Amino acid sequence: MQTFVCFSGKPCLVPILVKSQYNILNPSSSTNTLRTAEPMTSPKWAQKTIMLPPQKRGCHLITPKILKDIEQDLSGFKCGLAHFFLQHTSASLTINENYDSDVREDTETFLNKIVPEGRSAPWKHTMEGPDDMPAHIKSSMFGCSLMVPITDGHLNMGTWQGIWLCEHRDHATPRRVVVTLNGV
Amino acid sequence: MQTFVCFSGKPCLVPILVKSQYNILNPSSSTNTLRTAEPMTSPKWAQKTIMLPPQKRGCHLITPKILKDIEQDLSGFKCGLAHFFLQHTSASLTINENYDSDVREDTETFLNKIVPEGRSAPWKHTMEGPDDMPAHIKSSMFGCSLMVPITDGHLNMGTWQGIWLCEHRDHATPRRVVVTLNGV
Amino acid sequence: MQTFVCFSGKPCLVPILVKSQYNILNPSSSTNTLRTAEPMTSPKWAQKTIMLPPQKRGCHLITPKILKDIEQDLSGFKCGLAHFFLQHTSASLTINENYDSDVREDTETFLNKIVPEGRSAPWKHTMEGPDDMPAHIKSSMFGCSLMVPITDGHLNMGTWQGIWLCEHRDHATPRRVVVTLNGV
Image (cartoon, rainbow over all chains, first blue to last red):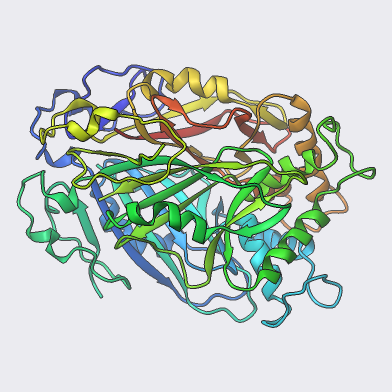
């Protein structure tokens, strides 16, 4: 397919044709009039905070929970980006395999192996417990935010991709995720 | 609160109601007219490059410096995203704890422990000094860019979150960060 | 330079003046009329999927391939953001040094050193081969997406920065990258 789809408050001035393996998102966009009120192509922003209930230490697939909270909103976007921002420094968000829970367990095994904890650990910051400083390090390793493309009203992830919350504390609290949707 | 706030050059065609723990950002948006010149809801872009002075090797809290440079600009956005892009391959940006400087020192300890340096290191790329190849690896571990939600004119980070510049070279140079703001 | 450039469907209501080391992107923007049809400042979205051919295990510089596929489209944006999203969980995207191929080889050496593979590895998820679980872990370490600022029709990366595809499987398949461009 040879189409780079262009969304705008007005039509693309010059049709942009490049190699693309993806479907045409809005075939009619090249015939839009200049009416900026045209519903499908006016940029939109939406933002809210999702509360995730406390999880035990480890990696958790949260795609179903996230979708439940934003699915209806996503459906209003033909093309855009969804940003997920975890407001914490001792947990992380990552995208990884959505099927075999062993992958999540092995990832937790890896994190615990690579970041020392307890007596043998060299940390100065220990006042919040032996799992606290390792949690901060793991948080920076995987990061606290994700950006996922939106296509035709859905998160455009690969077949095997899912969103994980990695909880790095032993006694977790609820976790807040600021979701920002932007697109047309 | 049951509101997903929707910003656009025109009103949301269908009010989007989902669970939200966040405040209503622009309660009047649902009564906007179709006038696309309505100031608060017209998408805006802003971009500039911030120069960070040389820092010693280690992790540094740079939220105050960043805010000093963009605070006034942020105030023009009700809802949006702030992107920070470090134009270097031997330093990194990450979000982590903003209070106890021990967390930053322990993180530097971790990075030095996990990425070997000097005689025992297996690197082929050594012509720029023993700290150079480890710096490149650390840069990819933590990453060179951040995306933070903007809400009501402020970076919507958690209470304990701050922006860190992690300088991985022994003799650092000034570091450039391209800041891009987008929102309404 | 003391200018923070502001792009919008209409002029900035208040000129925003802050310290900036970057050039003025669109000096005429402050004299735009309220016509939202003004071509240069109307927000645009574009999205497509790029297919990367199979690569051998290791880190590969893909900036030339990426630019070949999106260069023409980028030229339509004065200011914006380019998002690259790898739809896989056993490879990763990162930004690092674009010159000496030793840096890419050393990075692969590091990844293999830090994530155990084969008999000595503690993984439960082994049914897809000894390189599979390590590949998932490496994918979360470096991440599957990148966001790069667009300035004056180009990816605004540093002089030495390039986009890498890190292939973590021994027998790789083609890899899909969803590219989303947004800007004015």
